[in-house]
Amino acid sequence: MLHNFRWIRALSKQVVLHSHSPCPHYNTLSSHTHECKHEFSVVHFNKSIDALCKSGNTNKAWNLLHSAITKRLPVDVVSFNALLNALGNGGDLCRITFVLAEMEEMETHPNVITYTTLIKAFCKGCRMKEAHELFHKMRMTHCFPDIVTYNTIIDGFCKKGRVDEASVMVAQMIKDGFSPNIITYSTIINGLCKANGEDEALRLVAGMRCVHLSPDIVTYNTLIDGLYKVKRVNEALALLCKMIQDGHVPNTCTYTSVIDGFCKARKTHKAYNIFVQMMKFGPFPNEMTFSAIIDGLYKDGRISEAWDCFHNIWRKGLQLNEITYNYQVENRGCFPNVVTYNILLSALCKTREIRRACEVLDEMELRGLKPNEVTCSTIIYRLCKAGDLGSAHLLMNKMIHNGMAPDVVNYNVLINGYCRARETDKALKLFANMKIFGLTPNLVTYKALIGTFCKEHKLNLAFTMLDEMRGKGLFPNVFTYNKLFCGLRKIHDLRKTFLLMNQMQKQGCVASDTTVKILSWLVDFGQLEKLKDFVNNNSVYYF
Image (cartoon, rainbow, N blue to C red; front, side, top):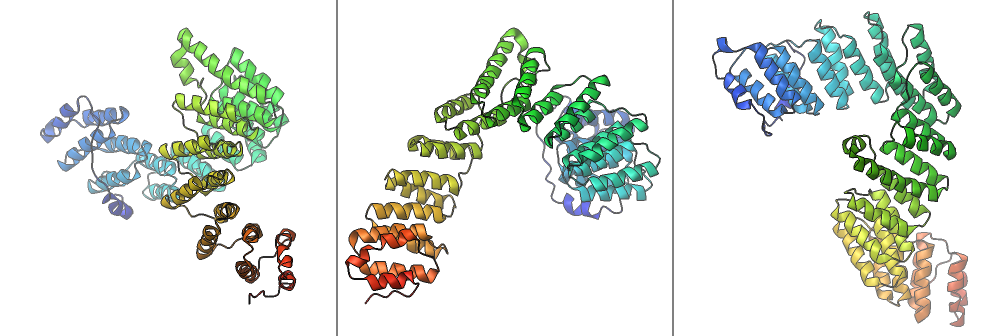
């Protein structure tokens, strides 16, 4: 019995039973649970539960199994395992705990498949503590793990970056009489590469050969990708040659790693040559390949080639589609995805090719793809810089419509743009919208508005903004003070000027040469001594 699963009972209370998605034969299967026990076939019932789970009807399988349990029919561990596996694949850890509670009540003992399934589910759900606890509990109940169990928990540790703990599990595995297989080695090698342990990974590959194991294409791809990511290009190429010598044919993942590696090493001519060969002879590139080559070309300043590459990809895809390769092309990743588009948009914005960026954005929307927040922010910034505030504002509204939340930076860019264009009403409307959406204006926001109000001789509004920002614990910098001093100079308001000078001193904000130059008008009004006091950091009073 599962004596140690007390936490299951607590969690199982959270479960709400629900069922949808029709399943053929479900009514027939369900009626079986109304028959007498002696007519109940465990074998057929197990097959029914397994079929429902494999066809994606997990809720139907859940209800059917629960119905059998309620009627105290002799359900065995096989049906439980099938349902646990389906729930684990769907990430439904809550209902998994409920099923375990049912097993305990029925005194159905979990076997090695049960435990392995549970460990896999908890690893997938990033709950390594529970997975590790289950591993130890199965040993305590004399249900000993097999090599699949070991590989499952080793993979879980590696994916969380806990390679040392994965290595401890390998040692335990060997102690229990299991020899690490190709899956074990590939998993550890992948974990080491992600943790920047490429040297250790290379030694592990050499160790594989000592135990008469040869790396498969997954192992090679993992290590080649890891070496390229740390710019160890020559070693990666040597390993690629060794891979081919061992009889493995490089696939799309292999070539994508090579292309990405060359791009990161600023050897885009080699990367582009490989990409062209892939387009001609295969294997066909996927989205990751497209993204890597376009990103590399743009970063290397080869804008025209990247642009041509992007559209050649699309034209190639349409051509293949017309030659009845629709299914193969779509599943082989012929069309650029969101990542590819975002890389292209970001690159176009950096090179200030706003017109092209907007064309790509329109095309992206036609394909049913949505740019991310970073890309939209970049385009909004460039559009504002180019003075196209209407398009920038429209894009921000699209972001909100598509469920993206513009941040303070987005609002500041657009507010600053409207302030520069002297469209103060629109800037204030955006300022109000920020607060409606729960965003807090920062120093940049207030600086833009205060500066504009000063230029437009709306000093009352400028000082209202000053009071508001101070009320929120924000204090103006020397640039904001200079804007205010400029506004006061235009109307020769001595009293407010001296008060502001005094506030600036109390705040500890140091005046710049520009500040003194702006305040030089005080000399014409016989206030040279006051200006000297201010420069010498003495208090300035108005009498």
